[in-house]
Image (cartoon, rainbow, N blue to C red; front, top):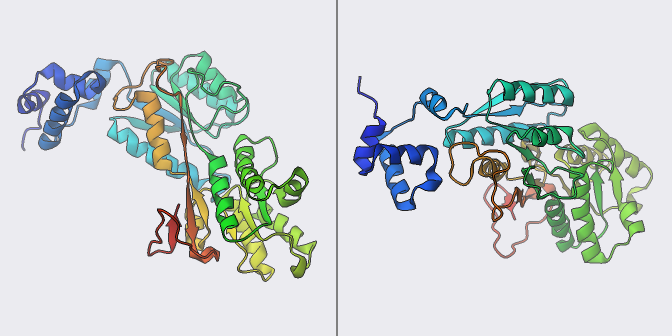
Length: 371
């Protein structure tokens, strides 16, 4: 059996010291770019892989990130967390890290897991998902100075740039604004919004984007916006019921909406079922999340670009190229404590929206178009 390459082999091939190779592996930010690239090329050429157990003993770090695996309450929207975890795992592997998934019964139980993982030195950091207003998980992690990044803003805090509360999020406001503007460009005016009850940080953000576009395009006032917007719980059935009730109150000739923007693909799918059963198969609907279900049924949607979300998560935890978790509160003033990812519009021909060529846009062969 061929002998595996060692650090000494890499050092000899790159023409540097053993310590320089170690620095490239563990603290690449302190190595000059030309030297770092030469060492990385030698590593790739030789197929060298650091011994993970030895590195953990040397650095006194577990090289592990902890993430709670939330119960899947809705198979459609719940798939977003699955996709994010997959992207997170890919980025972790690139950094020589691992992902530890754990379950919890509720928020208090999740915090208890944080304490056990910290006390046992089982993880170097935590990724928090599904944030909400005044989230006690974020406050606990910040108070105990445990490195973490939240996927979702710390809703309710006045200072979103607090260096003790790192977060990465998708700009939902920009996403629904893009979707609404797309419908406006196609000559539609009475564009409704179907979202969640007020008080949800993410839901309120997505409603605000629709409102921005309606005010900018038509000068819509509060009364009109209230008439065009609807609220319900998350899920396919709630979305379907709301639109069925709307249709039942009006005959087809006086249907109050020209199109609909939804806060999630689940709500959009329910709405799509309702309008098609009512004999309105060409009624335009936009979802949000670009789930596999949306792709399967041809629903236009807003893609969260979860690969960039995962990359942003690790940039905040480990720096641009680092291979160890930075201490809590170690960010610099010139590096934002957050990453806000601009989502991408995905327009599908089967949503009965004519694909119009615009600056910088193309129409791929699968009848999806990204803007």
